Length: 238
Image (cartoon, rainbow, N blue to C red; front, side, top):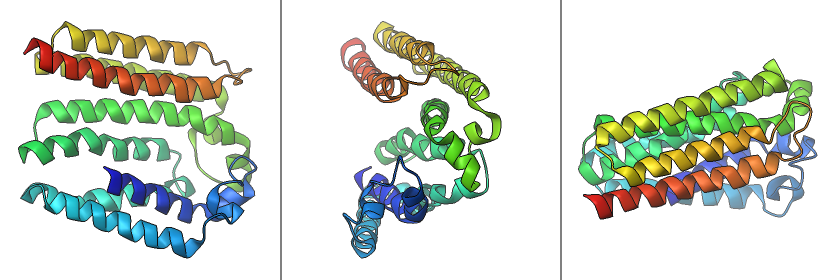
């Protein structure tokens, strides 16, 4: 996880350094601001990729076989905003690899349950990345970058994001049933749904002033709630 995510983030900063420099919101990032050099980030990227591949090779044969596929996918995301407004879903697919990859790492095989959880992560990420991209709607439109806000506007983006999060909640319920989960996992799903409702309730097409709260606070709560309730469900009720 550390290797793959670090490689993906470093590559994203490298690929977007000129775009970031032209955007007032991102101009202060390390590469555009000159805090880090391009050569340093490239070395860090290679080291992170090697760490990921070595860790995958140490687990089992299937993780080794699939690790280059995962690496190519997470590195390719950086270019998607240049040609498709579905880049949010590509990012969702990258993050969806986490539960699927964890399952394969432990079991050495694949099953329906991690796929359902992965699809839930895909919908969750797609939804919150649409919200995050609202900050750059005008900039993306001006420089020709593709995103749902730039293509469809704020109002439609809020609706699409809400639908993606509704789909996430539904997939979590299906995963709960398939896994035979107990009331603790169900409580975690309910808490997640409440956080997502709150996230969308505090945003309006005419007022995005609480976007940071909607993005960082609500999504941070979702991550922790699902983990805590899910782990507790497994440890205490089975």
